[in-house]
Length: 495
Image 1 (cartoon, one colour):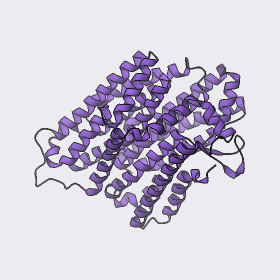
Image 2 (cartoon, rainbow, N blue to C red):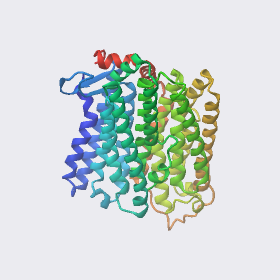
Image 3 (cartoon, rainbow, N blue to C red):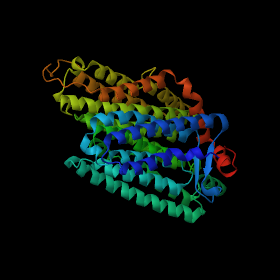
Image 4 (cartoon, one colour):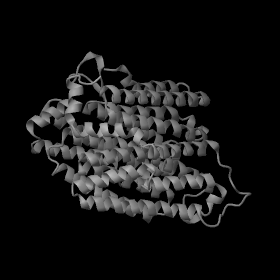
């Protein structure tokens, strides 16, 4: 047991509340926000290292042991995602400082970002389904406010769709939790796993599993992604970067946790459905990514393709594919944040989001152009960048399980990712520049430095993949062997 495990959730929550009372003092809010994110990132790294040395970390609130009390569980999978989330937010905050504007800074943007991260951390670390619901709701409440911050017409329009979809999915989530509790009498994930294994997942539990599949698919943007392209393009790009990097990933995390720890006894039904949904998501996302000329829409559909790709690893459901999906998940969180920030800078400098109205920007802003190039090849999975290793492992896992349709679709979707981003690179950065020296807007340091830091992160992840190989292997082993998680939570076999 380690009390530090609660800090990634509690620290941003408390600081967020304090920042509400510091509304007029924007500079103070900036300093406190950045330090909080940096400290929480450091704590997350410490916990991740501890898990590698001593095993899964657990925390039972109030001394009530699982399954009777509230538990937090930090394994390699959850803490890897918490660490990545805080790394991205720390860097993205630098972009927020210089782009969000004084008006929004005075409208509680920093408290809302802290609340968002508290919800994300709670979702990743909680050991029971009800607190997963609570984590989702805290995160979504913050995102509802962030999406409308500024009050522009497009934001209000997209926010209605976003709020309605998430309220509906949360309602169905609550119904699923109630059904599961009614059948099994517990909501602790480890205890649920034991109970389901005892009864062998009869049809009633498979039906509940499909309800959870639909709920988390809506939240992750798996097949049911109709709300995502508009909603992620509406807020300022620094907020969109956090949405693209974090929000869908919480849904993906929940799908991984639920369908490896609880509902893994009927893979012929649940994981086949996951596979079909992943294929349709990649096909739909690929069509959307090449169909639009709006930069915001193109990158939003790239988020959709990545969701399908990552969950194809879960659908294949063998250790190699799960390992590949984890590699790609971490890579995608970093690179999607980078992509949103780069596109935000491009729109700011050119004054438009339309592809046909831009040209030759690499002549005016060479660093911006080459950072976009790195992002493009990283997302396409070209070695030695960070997207490569995940794609190789997922492909290898698909071959091992003879999932050749999934293999073909994942490879073809990679071509569509490369093509859609190549369109942006060719149209926006190549050719004759349409920006004269007189009309050229200076690049803000606060814009380019966060982009450079995230580009360094993706390069480091690709070139130094051995550094996290043991963490990813441990995360995959825990997901594929539920008894490790159960032993740590119920028998206190962890720290």
